[in-house]
Amino acid sequence: MPARKKTAAKAEPKLPPDPRQSKSRLWLTFPAPLITRPVIWELGQKFKVVFNLRQVSVGKDIGIVCLELDGARSEIRAAIKWLESLGIEVEPVEISVLES
Image 1 (cartoon, helix red, strand yellow):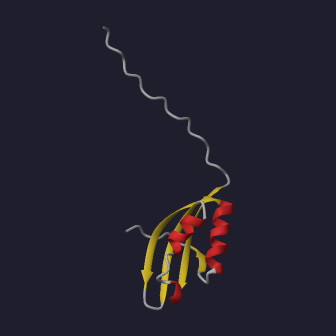
Image 2 (cartoon, rainbow, N blue to C red):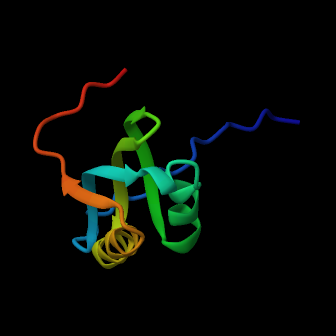
Image 3 (cartoon, rainbow, N blue to C red):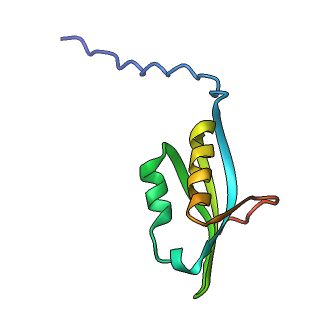
């Protein structure tokens, strides 16, 4: 029986990025009553976004989070609106955040 040649799997064609997709880096400032609430987890459950925590500082009276959101622009806008409705201050990141 002749040996069969292994064929390489065909590479998937690379599609251009969806113009409706977006990536946003945000500073979130949590008031004291929300520090222990799993808000970021809730955000991931409520909205079709991928989140990445870039930097976090939590104290007794305030929590500050640098959050990267990746997804459809409409989902990111809705997620930001939801965060603000909870009383979380949301600001865009102006400078690069160091990876650690």
